[in-house]
Image 1: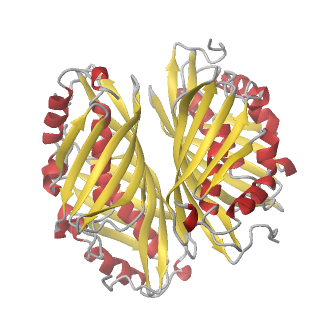
Image 2: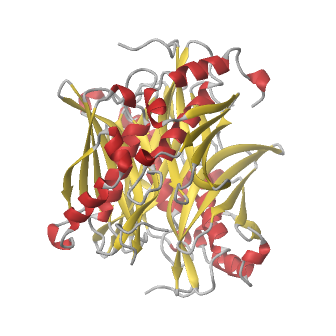
Length: 152
Length: 152
Length: 152
Length: 152
């Protein structure tokens, strides 16, 4: 993706939508980078986000990766549209341990209806970065249905 | 699966492990049913678990479905072993809206190393049940590594 | 799905489209059952369809399962439309050995744009049926683009 | 992966195993590149490998991608072991049209038991290369079970 393929105001639209996702706020996720077709989300460690061994629960990297994939797609959508995740698949490659997770969504194939992204999640432990999850994500563009209008 | 294929104490092991998953507690998930190869998890609606339109964030059904799949497998594992999710794939079929989610993990193929489960998530809105997500889940059995001992 | 939800002529449209899939003919696959939202494909064993141990190559059950999923969806599409597989995921649960494979595609969630199906593949060995693969499949409905007109 | 991480004779083992896959021979697939953790397979167009619109049937890129992923993993396995695909997921991004397909399997995470690879399939049309499929693949290493001994 290049900036020229994106639509004016994409970053504001993504940031605004992310800000309305209460689940992202609840778990402490932050949108750290928004470029056309590329989104990064960071999440600091918290003891209330763990599985039984004290690592991040697999649902946590999965949730921020899903969000990164959806917004990577949304960054390329036209105004007056909304993203809806169709499906995703994720392989948990290594325990998600450490002080922080970074999820990256990268558009592989943009489309008028469907956009497919690659997902990567890195765990940062003692400053060292390990790929802890990888996935694929499909998002659908709901046209003529602005993202910031609550459905009834 | 039949009860006779399961190992004594499976329910206590699953409930104990679930109880140590702080993320499940944080989001208000409850383990409502544990049978050999079958686990159900319920999650009441909370406004802090939402995406931008006020429905459950896709990461929430995904997280409880992942947990249900992992423990459906774990219910069939021998003592002195631990479950680790290898991968899962989920299709979000309908908005996860309503007063409650119910995630079900059902073992399709148990194995000494890998166990594959089917995932279903239902959204209950005004008492009516809608299939809102379906998935497939692979968990690995870590032998000789009791689940309740914290790794170093 | 019930027959009443389907559109007149669905079976002829599915059988006609299947008949134009030269790959299905090449590997000896036959469309054995077409109902609204449900398609079955059978494939007799042939020594030229194997992996290195003499079982069916994993690509064979995957290919007929993909086809069964696509046509299960197509059976519910309106006339003047064509199916295109968006993605699928498959778990190979047991060696695909025996005299025959049966792939089943069952629609879980029909939709105007996307239709999601469950995939199952059974291997029949000495008359006994084993679930050898399970999957999930997403197909998109290309509207206003009849399936039997060759694109340019 | 670096060559030093691989085991002597990996290329011969991969090529020998591929040569015993009758399905790969039947469809005209050739193993064009074998490096530690990286395998490429090419497949020239043939009119008997098509779906209803005259493009490659989705099962064809899926089958060679599955094979590329499995052998990318196998190239890193110890001697006296065999690969078995656990699962894969593939997104079909564009019609697989043109004179040739190239499937690439790249190991993302090697492991003693499970190895996860990234799959890419390119379609070459008039010499131009288009990414037509992307996927993720999990293969299990069967230890102490040489790949070239036929199971009973």
